[in-house]
Image 1 (cartoon, rainbow, N blue to C red):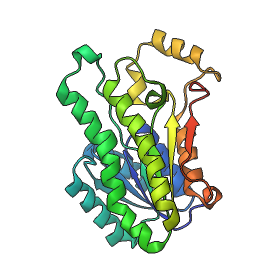
Image 2 (cartoon, rainbow, N blue to C red):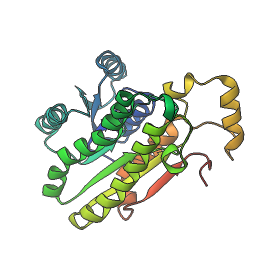
Image 3 (cartoon, one colour):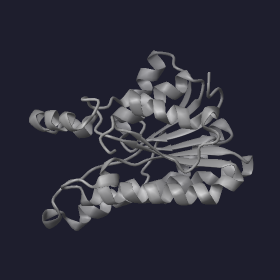
Length: 247
């Protein structure tokens, strides 16, 4: 087991990629904090883990855009497991619209969750990692943050900024024994994509060299690798898991 007894917080843990990551981390021996805003979906995921008797975990309802909520999540993790070794900033939302039609409130909400949420969670847990002299922080960007995407002013801006924060924190925290990296998913089979018309999906597949959408496990595997000792000398990396679409 590559992550035996490591304490891992995964935000957005009830979603497709998040829950795939939860299962991967549990299988690798980690103690996992499932953190998500959707209380009912989180309860459903918790029940599934219990029924399958999968590992040691804790579920926490959290709004990553609310620092007080994040602080409560962090306290619950430390009170239960004693420390925090890995943070996976996976939570994210979309509220798409063309620039001329995007409501300011929708722009701000995406920034609050996707960008401020990453800042809140990282700042809340990093002190524990500094005290331990080691830790892994894994941020989730997007190909939209690399090359932009029509109708995603807010989302693309937030995900591009996550890359900037990742590189900055890698420089600040590397000397303290903390690795900070980002995963850049491409178009992945999650609820965010299921609303896209089939014709558009086929067009997207045509642009991907591997000719398929990503699966949640593809992203989860990258998270596990970056959290493991195998990635101890990887810092400030922006790892594309996108089938080659953003080359």
